[in-house]
Length: 488
Ligand code: BG6
Image (cartoon, rainbow, N blue to C red):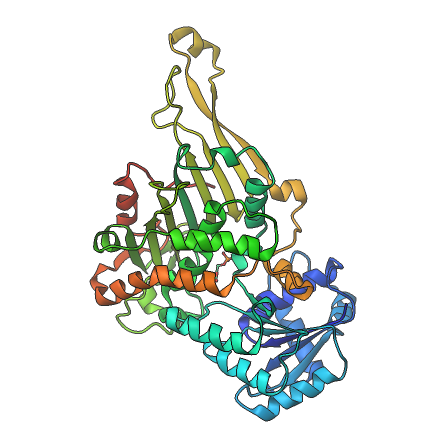
C-alpha cells in the first residue's frame, strides 16, 4: 500500500519533536509501509535535501530509544520531501497538487500540525485545489477550537469537504499503550467488569501531573490554560475509557458511541459546583528537582497579570445507573512535584470487618500511564509476622500489591503514542480518534467553567512550583473524606 503523508507545519516543534521521530520509529520497526513518502510543508526556504538535513539535525535533540546510524537515517531520509507553501496562497496548493500527482499514492494523509486558526482556511483551499478526494485522510491536532462555537465552525468546514470517516482528530493520550491496556483490561477480561460500578467503586482519581512549565509555548498557553489544554481532551477521554459501557464490538463507531454517552451523562455545573467542585491555580516561583524555577507570570510570552490557570482540579459525576453518586476527581497541572500520570480506582471496603486492618484500607487498582506503564492491584493480606500473630486476638491485615510492569513484560522499546496513531491513520483505523460529536460534547461540558472563571478571575489560587498544586485542591477532595493518592 503506498501513501503520501503531507505534514503541514513540517518545520514546527510538533513535527520534529514528535511526528518525525514517531515515523522514524515506525520505519525502524519495519511497520511503515514501504513505498511511502513524507512531504513536509512550510514557508521556510528549503528543498528536499535541505529538509532532510534539517530533520536529521533535529534528531539529535529528541528522545529516541536509539540514535539512528548514518545508513539508517539515509534510508529513512529517502522518504522525505519538502513543498514550500504559503498556506494563504491558492497557487501554492496547485504546486502541492502537482507534487502529489507525480504518483497516485493509494492514500494521501494531510496532517495539519499548524495553528488551529489555519484549519478552516487550509481545508477550504485543499478542496478548491481538488485535494479532497476519496483517497484523502485529514489529521487534525488539538486544540480544535477555543470553545464550542469555534470547534463547531471547524467541524462544519471539515464536514463540507470530507466525510467523517476521513477525519482523524488526534488525542495522543488515546495512543498511549497504558490507555489501550485500560480498554483491554475492561473489555478483554471478565474479572473486573462485574465490579466496575457504583456498588463496588467508591471513587476514581485521574492525575496528569507535569513537572515542566510552559517551556517556549508561553504565548500559546496563556490563551489556552490547563482546562482547554488537558481537561477538555486528554482527561475527559480517560474518563470516558473508564466509565463507558462495553461497546458491542471494537469498531470505531461502537467505541465512540459509548464514549459519547459518558460525555452526555456528565452532571452539568451548578452555581454551587462551579465554585465548590472546580479549583484552578497558577504556579509561582519554586523549586523543581531542587532547581529554582520562575513563576508563570515571568515566563516569556505570558501577559502581565495573566489569570490563565496552570492547574485544575475537578470533581465530576456521571449521572447514569452505573455511576450515580461516584465522584471522579481529575487533577492536572504544570510545574507540579513530578511528571506522573495515573488513574486510581478506589473500591469500597469490605462490608463487614472480621479482621483488623489499617483505617480506610480497601482494594485499589492503579493504572500507571507514565513515566512507568503498568497496573498495580492493592489487596489486603494476612500479616505474616509470627510474633504479631501471637499477640493479637484479631488477625491483622496488611496492604500488599500485585504489580504488573508493562515495560518489563513487553520490552521498553514499545510502540509510542504518535507512532501507533500515525500508523492507524495510514491504515485507516479510526478507533483511537475522536469523533466530532464527542469533541463538541466535551466543549459543552467545560464551557460553563470557562465562562465562570473568566467572570471571576479572583478565584485563581497561587501554588509554588514543585508542589502538588493549591491546597484548595486537597481541601476539595477532603470534604468527601478522601485524599489524592500519590502513586509512583
Ligand atoms: C499536550 C499539551 O496535549 O500534552 C501539553 O498541549 C502537555 O501542554 C502534553 O505538556 C502532555 O503530554 P504527555 O504525553 O507528555 O503527557
